[in-house]
Image (cartoon, rainbow, N blue to C red; front, side, top):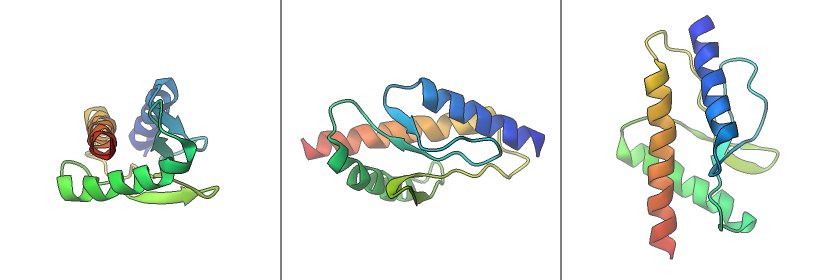
Length: 109
């Protein structure tokens, strides 16, 4: 359990430091709520963008993370519970969300 909490803390730090991700809630345990929020995308489009990324994540298959609503904002909610999950797995999650997010944004332009 301690490793899962440490991985969640790592993800929260990475999200907090990123200019294209936004932490939606504190992450004191093993769950991190965040969303993709690239510069230049209007606030009104972010829910639709994150829902599209969520669909793309399921189709892509590299990682699995569900979407959620927190304070009426769509985001992602990874819950780290598997003892085999590594920090590299968590980094792959963030890389995948970013990559797919860039694809969705470029497809809308």
